Length: 362
Ligand code: NAP
Ligand code: FE
Image (cartoon, rainbow, N blue to C red; front, side, top):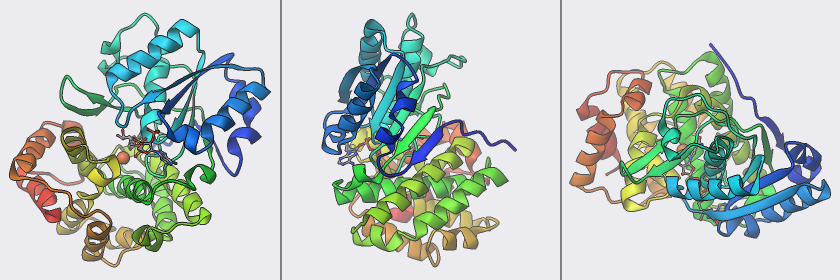
């Protein structure tokens, strides 16, 4: 067994400003990576700029990361980081800018390489990365993963390099004005990480230490996710659960629901957490059918009575995703060619099993 989470985590009110000197100590010039508007709206960007200015540290801002960031956007941002001499990277926002920050840190450090290296099995270093989440789903502030949109193969895929952030600053205030649907979708992404990591062939005692505790923290918020009403305590607990979930998937990877989701996000523009969530009931039913050890206990830990209760919750929170027969067949074909996801399932998985997982929601 192995457990390795090198990110130092500060989860508290005012985390960025309280630890500004530690952030600034990572280099002389930061490349700040954000989406187009949320970093401004949440106040995260103001905090980052103040933290750097207070410590006489330079910075450049790249604020054009789109949802599900593409390889070409990464190269655009990296070009700016390279030409301006950035020596560390700060990602602020949801999983999209946080993942982008890792890929950009790799491409700036390896300044003479092209985008081809993103998906080559090489061991390359990256600039130090600080992550500041403003959603409660991806856990990207601790994971080594960066999932990018690849137009060449028409899907999303994690880059081959493992880039662990060195520092994560988590502050619930950045979530206080987030739209309800964003909180619900990202909370369900975290639930997916917890479930897919627990019901995973790569799970160990250490990964379960993170996933089971994350389930417990998540469960306390089930009712609020269902009602779409949140307090600051809920945001803190959901952020805690999603960071724990990130620790769990850092060791196991995700499984079939994530693997299936990429098709829906790429082809139908369905947000990540929603696209993952609709496959969770089917994945759980598949575990139950195969008498997965610890199944009932884990479902209870997540705050559900049984598979039906879980499915009812998902239908209520994530209605109206239309999957055509063609979509279903395309997803079956895509996942059957994804050995990593198939090997993450604790049981032998056939095409019919994938169809059952998809059809469970339809
Ligand atoms: P996201 O794609 O980062 O952001 C979704 C939308 O929410 C954007 O429009 C963003 O605006 C906005 N937003 C973010 N925080 C906000 C806030 N506090 N208030 C108001 N609006 C806010 O969403 P996400 O679900 O967190 O991330 C999804 C990405 O993460 C996917 O690419 C997925 O594949 C990846 N992911 C990574 C991991 C991992 O381990 N690394 C795990 C799961 C998923 P702006 O565009 O203006 O920022
Ligand atoms: Fe996810």
